[in-house]
Amino acid sequence: MQSRSIFLLPIGAVLISCIAMLYPSILVDGGKAIVPLLGLIMFSMGLTLEASDFKRVLKQPKLIFIGVALQYIAMPLIALIIAKILNLPDLLTAGLILLGACPGGTASNVICFLARANVALSVSLTAMSTLLAVVLTPLLTLLYVDKSIDVPVLNMIKNLFLIVVFPVLSGVLINTYFHRRLNNIKSYLPLISVISIIFIIGVIVAKNQSQLFDLGLLLFCAIALHNLFGLIAGYSIPKLLGYDEMTCKTLSIEVGMQNSGLAVVLANQYFSIVAALPAALFSIWHNVTGSVLAAYWSKADD
Image (cartoon, rainbow, N blue to C red; front, side):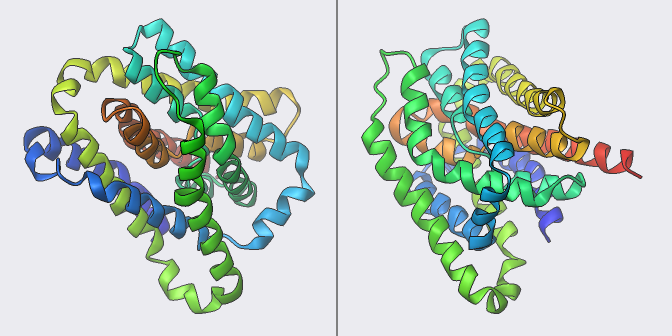
């Protein structure tokens, strides 16, 4: 179910984006559902984790530190450089930087499994970067976003706790004590998350239909480059530090695949609906590249 769901995401996202471009009125009023759906996605993520996933961090602190550092240093900085080179409008720049300052996405865990990478490490990195996002995402956004755009750091921290940390930890707590009773439900969690993300993408695209016609190619170049350099940095830096191939694959996937659903919600809530576009398109693209990498690496190991 997990692997099928991850392949459903880019297909579903492309289809709903086409519908949103051609018939925006169908989805344009769905904005109120975005925040609750993200909370549901984060809760679903928590239900796939246990307390032991966080304890595992203590067993390999150096590797976790490298992964988190790449996530929160390289990705927002790469976003800023790309935005400057492509001369993106201020709001799209803010959205791309916010995307870079978000934690790794849950899809990375499935892609790591399909690529025969280190799933336990991927889960640990996702869990740790998600918790750190409460403070680091607002602060990094404030650091890199143009000072003419207001970044409400305290409100972002508060909301990140409510829509990320609280649902995730609630899910972890329930899964830790009742995981056996949840086995039948867990198989449907990836599908629920994928459907939620697809709907969120559709709403964002519908609300930005006219801007996408004007900025589509430029924006696609920005998110494709951001994803590409994230994958390269995540692989090459651990390689230079002497880590094995499996670890390099894991960090490449984890760093290159962002929690784009979170970025969509924060950009829409604190900047504008236009600023949510980079993350919405990234949701489609990073799952395409992740799936291609997984197919290549899994065959290379045969």
